Image 1 (tube, rainbow, N blue to C red):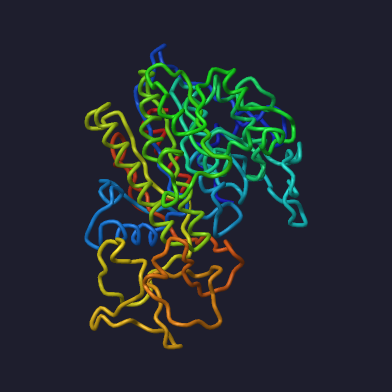
Image 2: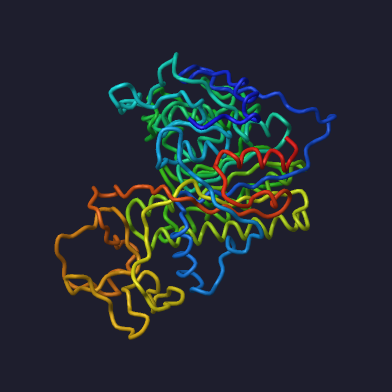
Length: 481
């Protein structure tokens, strides 16, 4: 196990709740502030599964080989090692939790100590297909998260995602449980005054935007809850302005809404290529509204923004969807930078961090000539590989052309096939070919280091090669927490 830093020793001592208990809180003593509200801001952007190759392919897809995404323009950058406490290749739960707590934990675990197990001695997960609590004793303790600590210190807080709000990445900011699949339990930790609420969140997370409504609704209402509770009604009773669609979202008055919750879909929100703008807000729109609500409080805030469906498209090996969601994520970053520069000119009190939790097995094949950006008339990096000297289609050992983008493993591994066309492989539902055959949707994460970039207050510290646990301490240092 990686050595726990001196910074984390006192924080681990504050962990109070064992996995499966009714109170999943992690108490934090706020620093002395003289009664004044904090003035610094942190916006943490997480592209789920956004490895370096995905970033490169998204750049070519959007602006060509010599163009720049907003992520490319961040003045400070480095590389992050992503391995978890028990695995060379991490899943999203411990990798995001490492950023949010400074602690290495086991795969599938949500913001718990390193001794917490998601599986029993036989390798069977503790949920066993049911959304129940983990073992009540002898299985770790919760670890305070950055959001909890900033909430306790008087900051505003927000969580924005294109996945279910109870999914692994957003859950690590506000919840504690031994297995990420306990999403009904995770949802309850988000609802003030209810059974299972995480009291370390005080009066509640101020902004909640994403999908996953089913984990807040009981089965009679078409949801997934088995306890009969209506957590949407409980959120409303706790003072939240609630939005279930784009129309409701547009009506939110950022200046007057004390707390807001938007659950726009039953499960995950749509891929950006499939999104109906009249039904679901974009990630950039959610990010903008979240900043407006938090800035209206006239105090510092913490906001986490996840481009979560990048990861899902990569698991499907549908590269077109993955690259478009990466571009949508980049647009949200630009939106935030522009808006925050108005609120805080020069970002003297605002730190923006952009990174990923892990990569995938996506690769760029062969010696392709430059394609330029993708359009309806030019498949670009999504197309078939054409030789950089002759412009002729490159062929595999069977004499058939192949795509520039491929995967190390995935579902599309035909034993034999006929020639592909650019029209086929450009389609948003086309599954790129893979070297190792897997079940549908079974492409895996990769273990390669990922990008981190930063802008604004304290950004100069985000350079070089770092462990993901180090980011937690750098953010705390930047805001003096």
